[in-house]
Length: 151
Image (cartoon, rainbow, N blue to C red; front, side, top):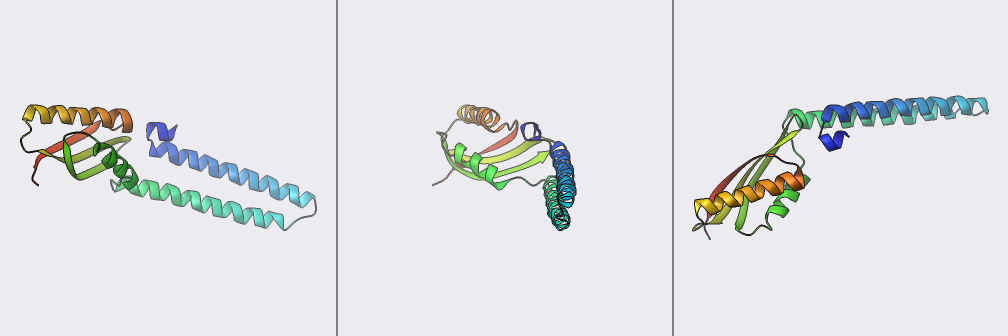
């Protein structure tokens, strides 16, 4: 659900709940193993659970730090670049910048088009890009700057 609505807070809560589940499982494994005369399993289970908790905490920290610094996944930017490069009329994409504000992606794009393209056609092209970004990437806040392509 957190991925679907792009909510870092919900993702952190889900990871915290998963961490709690690992603690419960580790505790149960340790108790059951002790009942069967395997006392060494309890500290091993505790160590494994401890490592999982540290990893979960680190993942939450990295995600929060990325959001707080307006970071954005480079892989997603590469996917957008690859997709937009297929559009007729775009000669070059010189910049794509993206940031998350809450759970909404804001994107700034600089494209280069034929220097003879009319303003009306350039506007139609940007509207086409906005539709593609919305439908295929769920990006609805976009600023597209159009520049003439000089070969």
